[in-house]
Image (cartoon, rainbow, N blue to C red; front, side):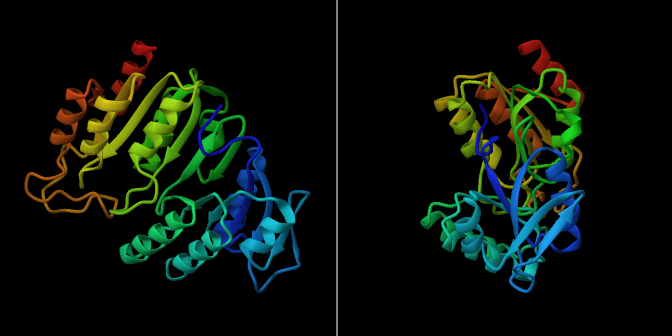
Length: 291
């Protein structure tokens, strides 16, 4: 099995006819994703050819869902238009929206996350690489060839590049699903959401949690693990050498005083029984030892 995304998922791409949308739609199709349409009201009615596969363009998410039965949307639109795109998808009651866009204003994310939640739409992102269930479907920008086969590990990560590295290092074991939740201060799906889903997934035997400095998401995840997760969890926290007060890569990766440090997060996770690696490669070794 997998979480959130399966072989049966039917994917729309909002912004498919733009440069990034075209590039990554082609990659998703090559990975076996069932991309059933794009959304662009100015180009509705056209069909875009991707290496011999014709993908229709619809005027709205609702129109695309009605025509195709789509249940996932991947958003590749510029930051000023992201809130409107997600709101449109939520209005159509699509179950899952994956927001790849970086640089979305935090107040926009707060608003569309609340709005989507009221309508039963799950948001992944923004500023994320998406998610992949190897051998089934790929919604976003995660390279499918780094871990092409399904396996026993569930992965949830704030960092896209660390998602790719851990998937590559553990490719011989494979993953049920890898979810990049994004590194902004506010995201739609949290570590805890993914931990709960992996705990309920019979094909996930071990969970890898990747966090980073800033905020308290990892501390809250540690408390959740201690109370609710029975499967083994291995963790990695990025940012042990980050200077105080300096944003490192992600908008949410900033330490203020003693809050949000890598050491505090590591301590909280270890107290919850999580084995925490000091480097990505050591984290991969801890996973192999545990399995």
